[in-house]
Amino acid sequence: EGHTEKNRRQKVKISFLGQPQSRRMNGPASLALHTSQPDTSEVSSKRKTNQIMAEEEKKCDDAAAAAASDDAPLRPSPAKVQPSFTAPYGPNVHVSAHPVVSHKLSVLRSSSTSPSSFRAVLREITFHLGYEATATLTTREVPITVPPAKKCRTNAGGGGDGNDHVEATGHKIKERVALIPIMRSGLGMVDPMLELVNDAAVHHVGMYRTKSLMPVQYYNRLPRECEVDAAYVLDPLIATSNTVMSVVGMLKKWGVAQIHVLSVIASRDGLSELLRHHPDVRVTVGCVDGSLSEDGDVLPGLGDAGDRLYGTPTIDDEEELVHPSKRKRTMSVGE
Image (cartoon, rainbow, N blue to C red):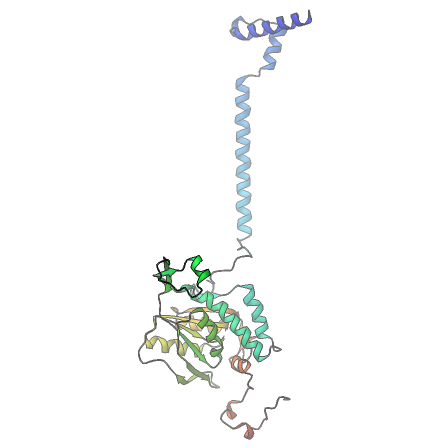
């Protein structure tokens, strides 16, 4: 009987739902059915209300994010190296932000670094800076052949008739590059640059600075005709920039189209002065120091780069042409 009564109720419910609203019965059963099925207008109204509230919340979140971005400027990822240094010197100046360069600069500055270590660290820093500086060079496509892997195992010399070699397209630096080391400290930067650009020519320029901080040229090996597209001036220190500006002017008169100055440390005043007179010159430096001494030396700098590079003592200008045995001050190791 229980099953029969249950089946009868289900049939009544189904038949009631199939009838039009005007023919549905009134009473408790009708009230129960109406409460089980909410009104469609109420559902749509609630949906619209929820949608409006969600939109308002999204607007508030967007406004909060915009306010946070205005208060805290965007910062580059610490894992990335900054490709350029645009302020306050301009887009032609690149100050390296590489942590390895910063580490090795501290070793180079240290007064406890021996001449042999100084030469090694200067070589490493120059290689890093030169790698960044040569990014402005361009390449041209050249045909190359690649030996097959099996022939490489059997014949290390790559001999044979050459029919099995694979043809491919390679790249070669388009510009004719020259290195211009300013003697004598610039000589320590030549070998690492030649490792990067092994076909580069090397033309030496010798300069020294007087007490009035003006440069004097004592050696020049620039050829009579300029066959160079890009020249890299090598000098570990840019102090007043008078020496570098003299060499840059010399290269422009010689006819070099692209001039790039490569230095380990530069003073802020010297760098600004260089760019004021030669805004078209590119500069790559490892660090910019803040001030100059009364004698025109970079502070903190790294000392006399030439003396530290070759282990020679500092000689007063008045005695530079006097034989060591006749100088007033002896240059013994104990002193």
